[in-house]
Image (cartoon, rainbow, N blue to C red; front, side, top):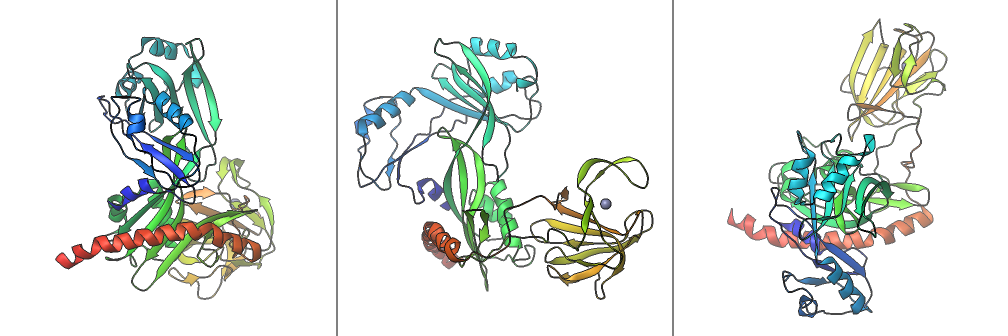
Length: 464
Ligand SMILES: [Zn+2]
């Protein structure tokens, strides 16, 4: 319920919006659109009637004025008027989908378009081989003719641009197609929740998308044990990106801020990008990313992360999901990050003496071919980043003394040597100043959300 506030929400930008939910009876019945944002600067109230007359059939919907200023109304009105006749429809590719079903769901009634799509040859035609989950957006005339249609490639929360396949009409009214890449707008959305049973449920109730929930868990797991420390009555507020391209939503992006209030603990984390730095920090500029030692021992890389490699002992072609760090026997090995030892084992035909450590945010690290473990290292032992855990050796299947080191994120191996801007260092001097200025509007908005939430929850708690 509170998440509806997200739609009224604007960050430090000043904007005016019209929100027009257009609905068309298609099988899916779900048509979304539109936020058109126009940036300007002082106070203004625009009666809706002034442009309602432009299009009699247009639904009456409020225009939300946040802050106002100088604005060229004629340009705005023209822009709105030109868009009012278009219908925007979207859908996702579903299992066992066909292009016919997709076009029906979108409300497309355009033989020239469907004919054109079948003439697009080869791999570039996304309708020739449908990839489940892809977002498709179409801009249509009210009669169902296609003005343009886009099939988006998937992106993750860290992506800075998006690729899509586009069919559109040229000046002569002929269809054409192209593969395009573009930047996108990131609109900050605020949402707020209260734990009644667990975090997942609270997120669903607050309309927080799954991709954002995952990032929330990553953030919280650096400071909380999610299965033990999340309890009824905890509250939280988040700000995350809603990504838009040409005014249409194309999905959610990065978690920009979270404030989580547990009984005896407050967790704050804000995303910051400065010059040559990026990461999550608390309100004081202290880094709260999970970071790793680039190399857990003093060594040289003898074999790197490689998806196709011939195994040095067996000669078989096998991917190498870790890095080999060559060092003399007895070289100390350190825990790559804070965590808990989960496995300690001997494997004669494989890793020899090895151990695995579980870290927050879904990371695990694995150390193999050790000659010896450090004293006190057992399954369940909590270790700190840089703590001694064992010594380099050549146990198991190894040609010589080295540390085989693997880093996994959510069970999937990642290359620990690849550069990352996240240093784990706290912000200092100018960056710290800049950071405080950058997060101030987010903190104000979260404070506002928290007040509203408090007011909403009080009567409910009283009624119980
Ligand atoms: Zn190896």
